Amino acid sequence: MRVSPILPGIYCAEYEGLYELAMAFVRLQEYSDGARFHRKIFELEAFIADWCERKGEGAFTYPKRWNGYNVAGTVVEEWLARVKAESSLRPEEAQLLAALRGAAGSPPWNGLYLFGVCDEEGPVEKALVTEHETAHAFFHLHERYRRRSHAFVGALPRDFRLRAEAVLREKGYHRSAYTDEIQAYLSTGDIDHGMLGLKTLGCRIKRVPEIEGLQEHFSRWKRRLAHGEAP
Image 1 (cartoon, rainbow, N blue to C red):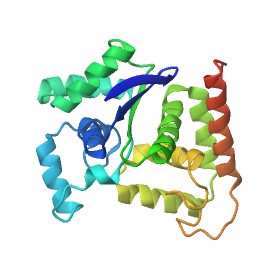
Image 2 (spheres, rainbow, N blue to C red):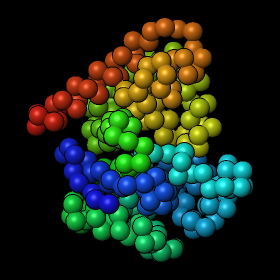
Image 3 (cartoon, one colour):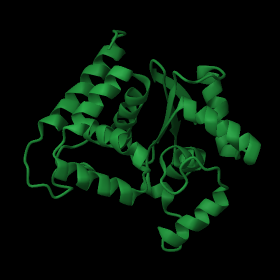
Image 4 (tube, helix red, strand yellow):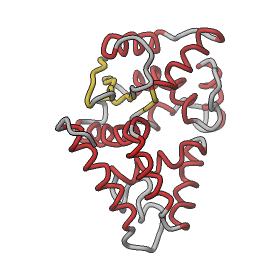
């Protein structure tokens, strides 16, 4: 596993497999964006038992469900302070945080965004997940990016947005993450067949200008940052 910067303020943790990735990020991710454990400190054993009963039909399928994780630096700091007071770091978490400190320095991490990906599903899928997680980073780190994304998402057709939110709710996202997730899935995913694609959601409309706007918004922001320009 290694952590390295990919764009200013954005750090990527790369793992070989889905299981190792999940074990490092699961408590952080659920604390950040999960509906059931939002802003809660929990023990992994309890989470695994809960998942097996409610979602996995007796098996811990969580690592196979997600192939990327993301969390703002401010949330990492908040979570870490609470874990030290209420629980303890697991070895996988300690390794991740040590690698982050090695790459980015010690906190404060208010201008930092961390995400994790893995090699298990191949380079194409890894690249797609990296794009998606980068969109989350832009949303949290850059106010102008966030404001514009909010405008696009707010202008989406009502039926489309309700369907998208229903999918996110079923996937276990906390409602506070809906706008961010919608912008990330739409700005970097397949317009028709992505997780929130038009055909995936069963929408009859063929073209949504707001989705095209989100995709151009992301591409333009990434180009400028990659070239060291002010976005």
